[in-house]
Structure formats: structure tokens, C-alpha cells
Image (cartoon, rainbow, N blue to C red):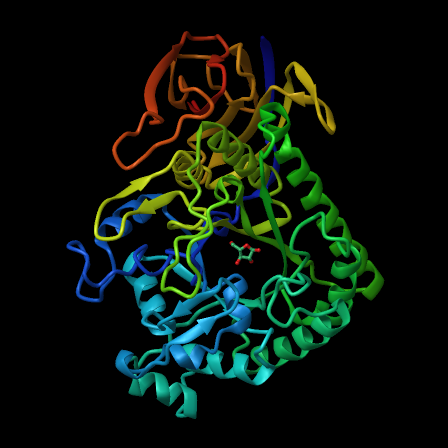
Length: 503
Ligand code: AHR
């Protein structure tokens, strides 16, 4: 199959916000306990955090990590998770039917983020919680005055405020599964009042209000409008969440779901614009896609681990090559919408629907989806460029003319190269793609060496495990003779990153 990709350097989408490359860790399953925190593990540091997990997290170059939930957030009393560990209460945790020992809490998480060099993104509980408990947490974390909760932080061994900038006003409050779910009116009101209070206490913070839990929610659209009408002047971002499943094994349809994600983003951006005009507001509200991933394998297997245990091993997805390709397409979608999506979180980070897996007391390893994220995060920083692709399309359930080649193009921050992220969705045929770069002298005067990293050559159901990693990046270089345009071959069913130096 032949394709042509036109890119004009003078036609950017937007600067890419570094916060597009965040992740999320919740008190859920084994994400915290035996995932990042396991005091008895041979590789645990003096704080009980696993060094082997950290070694896999660091290369991802995460901009931020969202915490502590998720659905967990809506029943969480943050006061349970501070102070001497031996005094902290053990609680039944009703979001995931587990026991929460509270051995990791706000201070442990924030100090772990500091050691990792990653910014934290915190959530305040608007399920069982109140504006007052949210303000108290903010005071504990960021307070610099000699006041009660700031003093409590000092008493707990932390003099300097943590300076957390990003705060989520609850989580998925439209979902009936949520502890103390709310109507849009109820949530809009409490989110507005909480936002006012929090910004009065610390005007430097940025706030994210809950959008719909996913696009197929019956209240999608109406929820966003109502919430925005209540909160618009007091918030900075509206959240989107979406997970995709491949329950019937229809790979072409599954790989087309990133186009649904694109539609979803545009719809929510459109609603934000509509309410901005209605309210005659001056500021734009940005989008925070703070939960996105593939999620279905574990539920399909039908295993329900015993309830009311610590770190019950739920939602441990075993990701395959097909999932990695969709994750690559979803990353492209985020980059291509960099004008509206300013924050995103791959949900989640360790063990629970995660790129990184660990064994209690044992090894840690990277799943297939780790690699597209790793390279997008490393090389997808700079300016998103508009792409115009001419590639064959296919029809599948629910969609016509899905391009067999998915693409995103980024002008690097130092403007020395254009980085292409290209996925061949076709299982049988390679795509031979001619790249036409406008606005650059690349390829005109001297030969150009194009760097390339590919993930290819594996059957769709291939997974990486503790003992074998068949899905690994392959590095190569291609020389483009002087005066010629780059012609890149994308192997069937492959993810590719192409780095074209600018002359
Ligand atoms: O990320 C797993 C769960 O998915 C989160 O707790 C919730 O917000 C979403 O439904």
C-alpha cells in the first residue's frame, strides 16, 4: 500500500503541553501495595518503595502522576493517611472492596514524586468529602502560614510546603458506581464552592472539574454544560476519561477507536467553547484527559480475587501488541489535539491497567504498551504539526474509511528535527509512505540520516511477560540521498517513530 504524508512546518496545531505525558496511580488493586510500595522487598529503599519499579518509571519521563484516585478518592479521608504509620486506621475500602491499611498517604506519595522528579496531581474527595476537607488538605500540602493543618504537616516532618499545582475536584461524580455520586446540578454547585475556597487559600493552583466518566454516559453533554455553567470562572480544565475494549476480538474496529477518542475531544472542546460564549467569558477552559487506556482483558477472564484483602490483585491487564498499537494511536490523537488537550494521564502506572507489572517479592517488567508511551513522552515534546495523509482506508463495524496509517508529527522543542509517529493498522500489508516536508530545506542539499525506532514483527496477541519480552523496540537508520524525499516502509501491524533532522 502506498501513502503520502504532507507536513508543513509553518502550519502548527499548537505547542504541546508537557503535561500531556502524565500517568495515574490509585489506591486500587496492587498499584500501591506490592506495586510501588513493598517494604519487605529485596529492592525496597529506606522508605519501603521498590527501586525496580522506579527504574521502569523513570525512563517514561512522566510530567505528573495523578493520585490517590480514581473511585477510591470518593470515600477517602486524607487524615487517615498522615502521621505515624502505626497510628493510622485500617479501613474497609468500598470502591474496590479491599482493606486499606493507610501505610501510604499524602506525605509518602508526595515525597516519592520528589524523588522521581515528577510533579504530583492531587484529587480532593467530593463524594463523602466536603469543601472544608478539600481546603484542609490543600492547607496541609501547600500552606506556608502558621495555621493548623500546615503545622500538622510540619509536625509530621515536612517543613516546606509541597507546592502542588494541579488539583482534581473529585472523580467521575456522574457515575452511579461512585461513592456519593451526584447529579450535574449537585456536583456543579459543590465543585464551584470548593473551587472558590481552594483558590482563595492558594491562588497559584489549577483546578480540574469532572466531565463525564466516558462518552457513552447517558448524561454526556448535558453534564458538561451544567457543570461548566456552575463552575466556569473558578476552574481551569474539564476532565475526560475513556477506556477502550476489544471483547469480540474485532481488531480493525478496535484500532479505529482512536478516531472515537478524537471525536470525543472535539465534542467536549466544542461544549467548552459554547459555554464560554454563553457566559461571555474571556478565558478558555482546557481539557484534561486524565484517564485513558485499553481495559478489558482482566474482566473478560472473569477472575474475581477475594474481597476485603490488602492489595487484592484486580484489573491486572496483560497487554498485547494490538493494545500497544491502539495506545500509540491514542497518543497520536492527544498530540493532534494539543490545542485543546493540555493535560493527560495514562491510567494507570503499575499493576492496575498498567504499562508496568510487578510480582510481590519478585520481578518488575514492562508490558507492550510501555514502549509507545515511552517514545511519545521522550520525543513528542515541542510543537504538534498538522498532517495531511493520503492513505488507503478500510471499513469496519461502526466506521467507514479508517486510514490504515495513523500519524502525528512533532517539531522538536529545539526545532532541530521533525518526529513522526506512524502506525500501520493493517495486519497483512506494509505501507510505503512518502514524506513531504514543507518549510524546510531537509533533503535538498545533502543526504539525510533518518533515525527510526519500530515495534513490529509480532503476532497481534503477543504479550511481554516476566520472563520474555518479544515486543521490543528495534532501532535503525535510513539514508535519504540528497534532493530526495524520505520514503519510509511501515511493516504490517507496526508502530514507528521516524526522526527527520532539519537542515
Ligand atoms: O482507573 C480505574 C478506574 O476507572 C478509576 O478508579 C475510575 O476513575 C475509572 O472508572
